[in-house]
Length: 141
Length: 141
DNA sequence: CATAAATAATTTGCATACAAACTTTTTGTG
DNA sequence: CACAAAAAGTTTGTATGCAAATTATTTATG
Image (cartoon, rainbow over all chains, first blue to last red; front, side, top):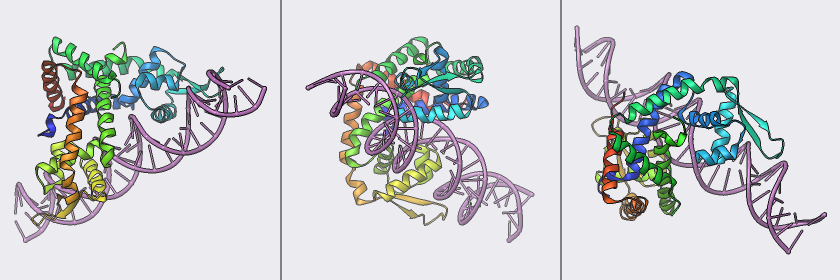
């Protein structure tokens, strides 16, 4: 690779960084980060999931999930409740405050997505989405 | 956004994560991380740059550059020398060991790029590269 | 059924990243 | 030239992420 700007790893990282920073700035009004948002998003779909389920869905390490939940719990947006059937596990529930954020945060996220992707045409976008999805799901070498 | 997997920020992050982890695993043989590699890459192009120049090129915060250089210096791959013309600045030089790594690390990086991108056709790849570049360079909203 | 293996969560340690504050030095302005 | 503004680097604090080790519990196996 002659120039670092030709390296796909670098390009992916910088594209991600750009979208992440934009979303971070917009979400900061609610004191929530982009990663915290995606975790909440999964909970808005379905409450009472196990930590390991959240990790699988978001493709995050268990240790990362623990830290994320610590902060969200600290902020009063979620709570851990012991599972009635498996004492190793706790089930993650939204607090009322956590539920309240669904609409405003989704609006911000949609807006950021729309803005960041507004530089592309429809066919381009569909292609990009397909390619990123394939790349992200690609099994290990 | 209905499903989090439709969110471009999420897709970009996961695609990046995949490529990053693959490269990290391959580079670990040399005790170097992907981010350290890109910094070295810029130095292989041209020695004796200022920290702030490296940050601009790599689009990294000054604090991040400081930490990166600390670790690379600790590892004996680079050294900071005071600038003869500006006492605020130090110029970053490769050590002999840092130079030695150019060929083997570039080989690994090229290989990772080739492997990770082998799932795409040529036209797809060109399109992806163009789109990621545009996205990464997009000015702030 | 006893025990090994697997699973869930956590803890610790390390490496990015950025924000904000601070120090030192250089530049620009009146 | 004096002094404000800008620039370079560092420090501190916070938030991801993963690896490796640990604990507690559950499942699978002989």
